[in-house]
Each structure stands twice: as C-alpha cells, then as structure tokens.
Image (cartoon, rainbow, N blue to C red; front, side, top):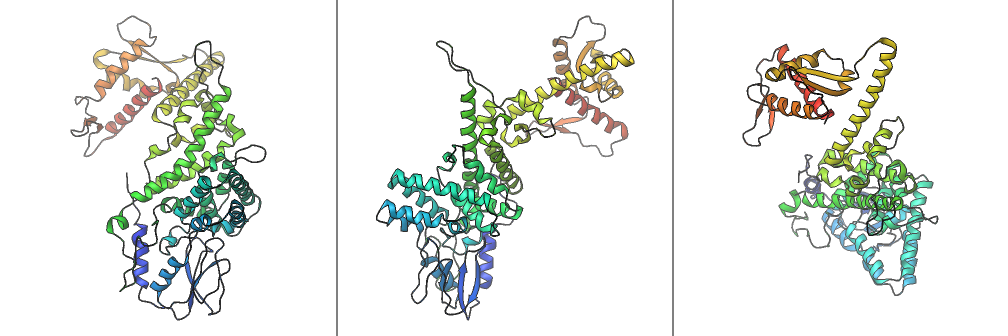
Length: 511
C-alpha cells in the first residue's frame, strides 16, 4: 500500500515529548480530555476533577467528572500516573453484578454526547494527541455487552444510541471536537448499521448527517481518528517508559510504519461500505420480479434517487468525505471504496440522465464507488444519449436551415488512413464530433452498419501506435505506450498530437 507522504505523526509525537521530557512542573497538573487534543493545565493543589465512566483515582486526590488529577512534578511521572490511573470502562462493566447495573451505567454514559465522549479516554497520553478515544476499550465494552448480557440490555443500548444521535442533530453544541469522539464511539458499535428509529427508519444515515453538520476542521479530526484509533497500543505496558529518561520507548518498525494506520482507516471504510451494501441489496429485493416456474428472481436495478427512503445519500456523502481524506493522505487503496452491490444493482440508464440535471441525485456523482467496468458502461450510455440528442438537433436544423447530415462521415483511403482521418477531423466542428460515426473506404462499396467502423478503428489504432507514425513509443519494461519526447516540437507536431487525441476520443465515444 502507498504510504502517506506527510511526516509520520507518531515520530512527531515522540519528538515533542522528548523535547519536553527534561522540564518539570512546580504546580499540580491535570491531563484533560475536554478537547480533541490532550493538554496539560496547572491547577491549584485542592482542585477536584473526575471521569464519567472510566474510573480515575489516585491516593490523596479527589474524583468527580471530567479528568484525572495527579500531583507529580516530573512530566514522565505525570504521564505514567495518567496511564495507570484510568480503569478501562469495559473492565468496569464486566465487574457489575447484574444487567440492571449495566443498563444504569450505560444510561450515565449516553446521557449526552459530551458525556459519552469522555467515557472511554485513551490511557496513553502520547497516543491521546492523535485520538482521545481508547478504541480497544470501546470494542471490548461492546463485545462484553453483546456476548454476556440479555436482549434487554441490547435494546436499551440501541435506544440510548438513537437518542444520542438525535440529540446531536437537534441541539447545537459548541464542543464539536468532543462530539467527534462520541461519533467515533458509536461507529465502533458492531450493530450501528442495523439500528432504527421508532418509525423503523435507519439511524445510521442520521449519524452521517451529524458528521456532515460539523465544522470542516472537526470532520478532518474525525478522519484522523479513523487512521489512528486502532493503531494505538492496546495494553498498558506494551510501550513502557524507560526508568532513566522517562521517554517512551517504541520499536522503530512500529514508530515509523504506517501499515497499522492503514488497517485502522480501512476498518472504518468497511463500516460505511457495509451499510451501503445492506441497503442496495434490500432495495434490489424490494423491486425484484417474482421468479418464473423453476427459475430465479430477476435481478433489478436501483438508482440513488430511488433510495431516498433509506437516506442513503447522507451515507454516500459521508463516504465522499472519507474518500477525499484518503486521496490526500493515501491511507488505503482507492479500490477499497468500490462497492460490489452498487456496481451490481446500479440503474445506469436512470442515473446518467439524472446526473445531467442541475439538482439530480445520482451515483455518477460519487465515482469512487464505481468499478472501471461500471464507469465504462456509463461512458457508453452517455455517448448514446449525446448521439440521439445530436441526431434530433440535426433534423431540426435541417428543417430551418437546409440539408444537414445527421452523421459524422469520414471518407478515407486505406493506403493513407491516418493522414486522411486527421485532415477531415480538423475540418469538423465540435458539434459534428458528437454525431454517430459512419466510415467509407474510398473505392469500396458497402454501407457502414458497424462492421466497417470496427475495421477502421482496428487499422487506424495499429497505424497510430506504430513506430512509423512516430508520435508514441512503447516502454521496454511495461510495454505501455507514451508520447515520444520531442526536443523542440513545432506547431504542426503539436496539432498532430491534438488531432490524434481527438481520434482516440472518437474511438471511445463510438465504442
């Protein structure tokens, strides 16, 4: 996989810590999670703070609801204490005595998005710079709930999650960065794509709407969380501090490698993909025709416009945000965004015309979902539409301004195929190139019903890419063709290259 071109965030984090490892603090210090970046703030000696679900306690300090209080002067001791003082929420839930106690604790955590955001703090203060949520703890908590509690707890978790998402969409909040932590926690729920509102409408699109309603900077922060949340250490002592310097020691392969970040990012891409797949399959089944006797149901096509009932557009828009981040940071291969269900069930004949409308909703507007095969079919459909439109316009022009040929006609000689073709293309208007192509070989009888055109393109492509023509040359290693370097290309040479590109476009258009 392609590695991110930006400087490695892990190395930057360690370098920052090394620069400050010799400094000491004369006042009490708190590691607070009220923002998406952990910050150290001096507090009076009698300050009182706490964590909502992740229990934090040190001898001689008090606990309430927003952070971990420590009383150490050396920064490395502060970080060690911060790491050791946080009790994993998943561990705390597993130690509760009954399902009702679990429900009660979940009610506290999901009482509001900001409280939920602080319920799974990252124990490692250095990793918290990149992602304040302990994803491993979140996954462990969900795993415990779904494997060891009753359906009553599961139903209550669904209700609380739906209420939290509705709250995010209904009530503006100034703590946008905190809300992104809450979004991350809810996305890690393995059943989030199955949850529905009271009216049986899916809730996942509403979560995507909540993401899209956040400021751009916070949406970017969420994308960074996707890349780093599952790349953080999963155990307290996996990356210990050295006793002498207080600087965390990390193996070079873990510090410098980006494979773990790529895997982390791809897990979140898969969450969105699973919902899109689920809804596309459901929609295709709803419109499928009954099977004939002894046969199989007819596979039906669906368009993005026709999926408004499940609000798939909000999810696809959110995926566009993830894809845009990936295009910049090269976290995963672009093929990770191809969706098999979309490519199988997309109604291209409906989607292409809608894409041409000013306010049309179409999968064509989200090409990262589409495979090369689907895109090729879209180009073919688009070409047919343009040809029909130009044919109609030609008839209307003929009615008012005289005879107009409804086709693009090329008359060429076999022994001078390339020159004749380029010369005639140079004389055509752009609107003529949108007409359906008809080819005639000079001195030969016959009507072009498709066979002559096919032979024409086979012959001319062979000649254009030959060494005799001189515009392209083949790479000895890859066997791909590229433009032959020209030291000082003249006007005629550049015009010839332009016309050659026009010819290749014509071949694609009439394919």
